[in-house]
Length: 260
Image (cartoon, rainbow, N blue to C red; front, top):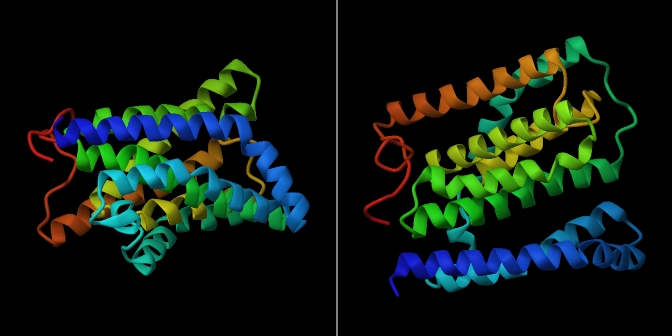
């Protein structure tokens, strides 16, 4: 069996096990840990960590020499990831502060679950593992590598509404967000902290100013969000041009790659 085929098979099996176990036991395990800790947000983070064990084991099987940290991009610069995300999300923070009221009722649980946990684990599992490993270790190009993860990422947010138009909008926003985060991850030399902090700070802005009860938002919130997205894309392209580096995602890596 070729290495790329073997890697893809391990990714599929590992994520399949993660998906089943997460769906069946996440809530009950979180409740059990909550009874021990007395802190719901912390219990959520611990449960999310435990649920990722199949993905961590799959990562080790695929790239034993590199290890989990390097294979998932955790060994890259945290400071660079934070500063890049901070600069890119400034339009959201500045714009929201003029248009919306500050939310004084934001809780520790909201911060731990919607900002820290969502930003870190969703990027680590969906971009680091589900997108990054197929794109880096198999012959799949960007589109084939990112498609399932982005679809799954979008579907995770459908609980936020029951109205068809809102559901479609929520899915589209989060689906495209999954693609953007994957692109950022690839273009910044697979530094997972880039999409992690982008995700965290974008979610934090959403919570700090009580923008909306779902990911769709309104006209003004999306204007500032799209400004942030534009800044992410522009700064990434300018950085790579300045460094004389080719874009990782190009016509040769869109569908299939000849070499891993």
